[in-house]
Length: 233
Length: 233
Image (cartoon, rainbow over all chains, first blue to last red; front, side):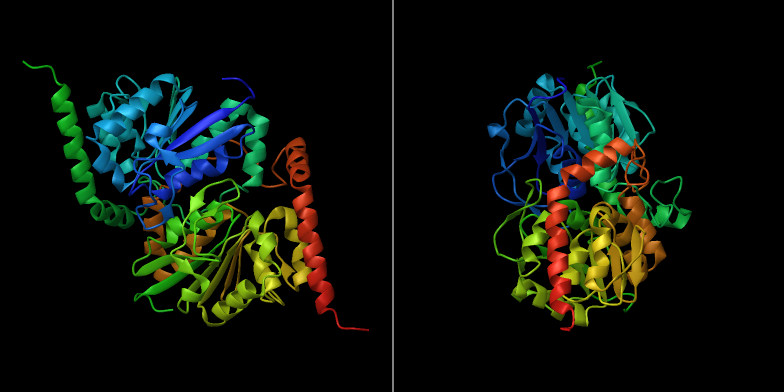
């Protein structure tokens, strides 16, 4: 990766993305000197995120140039793309030539469905972390995991931490630190509840119960994927 | 504020908003039970944020109901609204009846221009923090500052911290902690550079120089505002 020169960064945009998986890294990466960050939509129209925020793509998948950085956010809409050959093929083709492939949250499951996790150290959202081995990945219990050209942010807001790390790799630490200062990223969470091992047990139980159906669907998709890959006896 | 029941949250959306001032709080507040978060645009079409992200408003200012929570994000586009009577009048009217008025970053300067900071303890983005007294505010050097119904987040990503605090005030700590777990907000910044007193001196110098023109324009606007309010001799 050159220390300067143009840098084409592209984010996958789809209905039901969790917007901060996308907008957190956007805030950091769009400030990199020479970088353009574009949103490539599964469709050409506006999408609603998981909670209703409306975002517009800059272009559709087929309009994307060969990307230097492929950014794959997660969100409940990821489920509908897990067997979408067009999207998975696009991810495979872009990942092949990209200098960096960067997933946030359940974006890692999309990379898994595209066959891109086999043999890789990876992380994903805490509620589905146990599914990584079904995609052939080596699960690592960390907020940010790097494996060669691949970078994985565990969940939702972790995209900010990973994007700053990526910024330093792409343009140097001083640039990343300047961006951190510009975006005033000196977090002061008012509670200690951002990880399953930190959250009060009743809070963890409520969150887990609230997403049980979604987790079950994601498990079933991972099982199907793994079964289809298993060598016939 | 009732512990449940509908909660109408509205964010001001304008060209040149810094998107994470808006999307950070959106991620938290849209998960509150009973809450709807809507983006009210200065115009009815899509806007580009400071760095090019395209967002769509749900409605225009005039379509907004009386809000329970008025959320005012910052960004370079704030400058163009500092003498916009329609927007400032809307902020004043909404602030009058709202249970909470919540600014992020230079959104506080918009509240200042609307005359809403006089006598209030407040904070804003580090590069313009010294302008708060021109709007009659008592500047407080903190990431999140509360004064009665008003809540101020200092800069950009601080909207996440403030929104979690607001979530706890509106719906209780257990709900806020659950949201924090859902969005995996256990930050691990790779550098310590998110505040002027933490950043390496050369990083602070570069960031300050990079925004010097913008800071000068913001200072001039604040001076004009203060001069217009000064009693004639």
